[in-house]
Image (cartoon, rainbow, N blue to C red; front, side, top):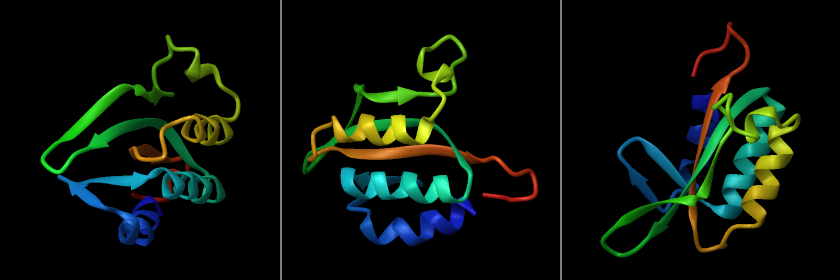
Length: 108
């Protein structure tokens, strides 16, 4: 199911870096909403600045829900927290949404 969502969102990707989908903020938010509908777990969001010649990761614009030591890990609603996080970011940034399926019968 994750792969199906990724395929739908590929048309919004400005740049494909390796196999990473870097989405503009508005489509990253839409991607998270699709993950929520399919009960796909959000593990984190990685923010990037793009220039004509570089892809610059930004730790200040990234969030990790998979580290048990982090406050974010304890967040009850990762979907809304992810959307809120993205809404506070620069609209010129691009994001990778790191996720996994919650259903063992689904792949992707």
